[in-house]
Image (cartoon, rainbow over all chains, first blue to last red; front, side, top):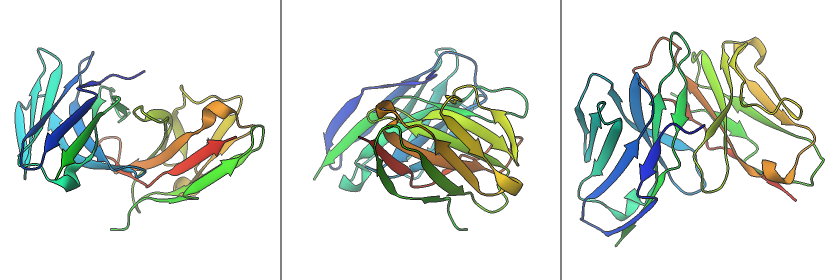
Length: 113
Length: 116
């Protein structure tokens, strides 16, 4: 089953604009992560935010987490054509020593030059 | 550090044939995962290993899929016999340990399987 659901399913913007993607999930989590996948390639880990954190930054990425609403957002500022990819949120909702991620269906971001 | 290695990169087989995928995780990573990603969807966990033991295989179709991780390092995922709906990208990932949740997974480039 897929824990996270990204919104929108697809997003098309111009280079230099900001891109915002949202993720909603259903159960309590230990952390939430965002991954990028270029066409036909594996997933690349972007950023991890723990359940007791509200905001995190990494370069042009900003992630927020609202555990009361069970939602997260990923903001990419000053987008570039190279940011064109699918973006997935993944939640770690497992207990104990079983570290297991459940992925959403992803948002396809297209950045037009 | 070297990444997660997977082979082959692409595979085309006829339905009812068998196929095997290979994965070599990052050195020292105790946990290894196999995910199935159907076109247009997110990855779905098939099986999780901790060293050479299975932690979770609840979503593995055991009548046709099997996996092993010999000596807690390399892993092989096999499908026998394949069905058309098995067409997907098979992703291998590894993580440091089940107790170290502060780091993300490292994924391989995947094997794209087409069943015709």
